[in-house]
Length: 319
Ligand code: R5P
Image (cartoon, rainbow, N blue to C red; front, side, top):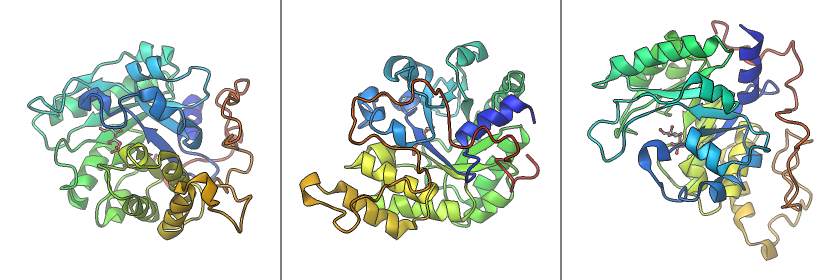
């Protein structure tokens, strides 16, 4: 694999633990001003420091993200439909590769609608996008979109959709968690990341995260279950403690509840110095310094990116 491609993938899936926490805020591309995402900047700013990358559209990035912030961007480049239209599957590629490069995208993301009326168009678009993006060493994340039927797709369907996306050359596949998720992971030769889906209780979203990782997903690309939570920062920290830490779902939920308590309730009486990001000892969330600018002089620096012999996807030999 090309050095640039490997390097970009390593900025999304951490080589330190082969895990990824992506924050998804691209929903407006077909949902418009989704609840709690009406003000993009207000939603993204407090959460950005706790994720590895941001999944976002061109327009949202330009208007609502500080370009000085060194966060890898997974740029959504497909669209063309809306939630009030007739058919969500009729997507096309809406962003040129030149613009993606101008925006310093680390990866491109697009949806494939396998089994839909427009599956041909979206699958061919994926193949073409991979060919074009690979010329510049840019990885492509394929989203196995399920239109308005989220929650009704099983392991058989998701295995089919993920495998087709991988066979077209997608470097990472994003899909939905389901029963027998191991089957989906085992039959997909590239890393799988799960979407969070519609808002569910925090306890359930943390269980979903834990179960998906246990079944072999490398991480989450989570949106609504983080920023529609009553306590988005507490929630992303709890998700982080599963993805990059050693917490199980119960422990992460306890952490969420503690972090959600009001400051004067002193949640961590016994462990006043305990930090949420146990496996990133040098990465401080700057809780006490709200105006401090994050690492302006070290763009894109991550703990282990500069270890050339470290393979990010050891367990995916066919990639
Ligand atoms: C949906 O099409 C978008 O790609 C979202 O990024 C994706 O669904 C993940 O967000 P959520 O966790 O809210 O499902």
